[in-house]
Image (tube, rainbow, N blue to C red):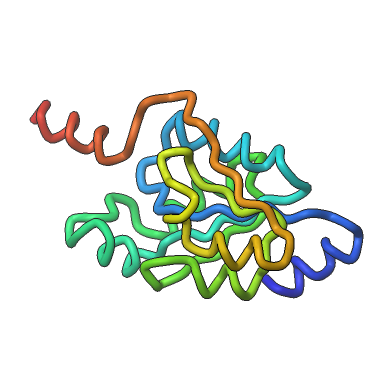
Length: 148
């Protein structure tokens, strides 16, 4: 991944980085990712691996295995690269890739965004994106469980 980033940067391109589980892809995810991508020249998604998701969300998650989640995300025009990570946070990835723009949803306060201080330390920007859709994977799973 670092090689791809270096090639694109050599052309003067700016990298946008975001991360997440993206377990059941929904309209909110797509809108968020499109907005993130519009901030730079290429979008890198740090995708929580199955191990990482279980650490964060519990033993019943993810619903979709990492290969399926990566395949669905790769079908979106706005997504350029996907990198799986096993840790609970993408801190190591952020430090290795040094994004120009670190993006999270506006539900995160800037001081809670992993890597924010690091990105700002070299002149990168931390951007919080407002949600256009009030939907979540956890909420969808809850609806599904209630209907059965």
